[in-house]
Image (cartoon, rainbow, N blue to C red; front, side):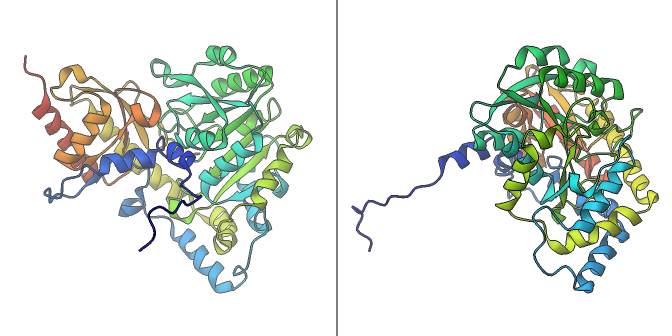
Length: 419
């Protein structure tokens, strides 16, 4: 036996523990831990934005065949260049150029291991001692987790539910100071399901230019819109303000497990090059992992050959599910949805705990819902800084969504406060 008096000089990295505590994964793990093993019904996963497990969201055969062709070619068995396979970078540039008033080149594209790594690269590249970044509230919590790990200070600006979750632009100038380096815009919105107009995004770009900061545009849900507003990429305003555009094939092609994303310098004026940001991006990629080479090799075929009917089917499925979700929420008295989702895979819902007995807040609601009804949703207080709000994903089979909404309604009826 080891001598218990021996003093070892190593210990766990507590910084990782504190950073992961504010991640959606960490919150979901907490909720999932309350599932009852006595409930034989299938668990309804309305918490995570991964519909790939459902047959109605299967990816295109073009994408599947592209992977097979890349493997069989035997051209992509080795290491990839630091910034990505050249053919993949060209294909991504051509794909994004369809929506831009200027032309990106392969040199503007950095291939990453999903959009999460693109976020890591962006935050590391802009960080410096004392720097702070403006994040939306509610927003995707990985930004906060990664900022905490990077010792990058965070300041929050509100998204306004009464205005369709638009950015509170007036508040941005009051938040920023000489150490502010960037603002994050997530469009289409996670967790809100919002889609921003051209005019609103231009206003954000002009505000960022006035402050002398760049925009990190998280567009992982790009083109997944099904309301009246079309998707407008932030890169359109690259001549007004430098933009780091982040994206991936994870959501539009419904393949989050393939881990293929990109970071793009949408900056026709070359400001990011002059300021050293481009050099920092390459420096980070030199000391980090790469996406699988054969998936990079498949990207040209995936981006160029996927038919519009595949995308249309996904949009129709999402719209039907969003409508069902919105209507179902309206039948639960303790829940209120201020804005019908128009994009992404999520909706934010206000929880009125005053109508319920034995429910103290959104976390308590979600944990008891998991235990009693085997339905998983995200408490937005812990996950997104919005106490007594919930994030629900509607990206699943309609039958599963309807079952989940019935169980939520039954949960409400069981816990409703007696008059």
